Image (cartoon, rainbow, N blue to C red; front, side, top):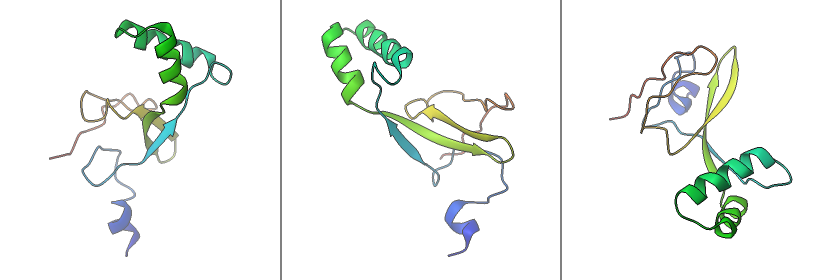
Amino acid sequence: MKEETRFGCMDKDIAITDDYGEMIEVVTTSGINPITFQRRVRCLMISGLSQEQAEHIASTEPMKLELFYDIGRGIFAIDAEAVGNTLLYNPYTAEEIPDETT
């Protein structure tokens, strides 16, 4: 299979498409990434969970992040729940990432 077919056109700008999606899962902990962990706990508590429940979820349920790579600039990740649900912007160029899904 040709690389262009397998990965989409490699020299195209970044876009959200039906055939592209690379996701990673990240677990937060108070020891490794305390700021993100505490902010995630606070967010979960705002949604109605107790602190104990929120800390358990934050440390055991991975966050799903969609990966994007801007050739010549670098990689970045966006919470997978936001992809396709809100306007997204490339942090290197401040340009909107077009949603080309159907």
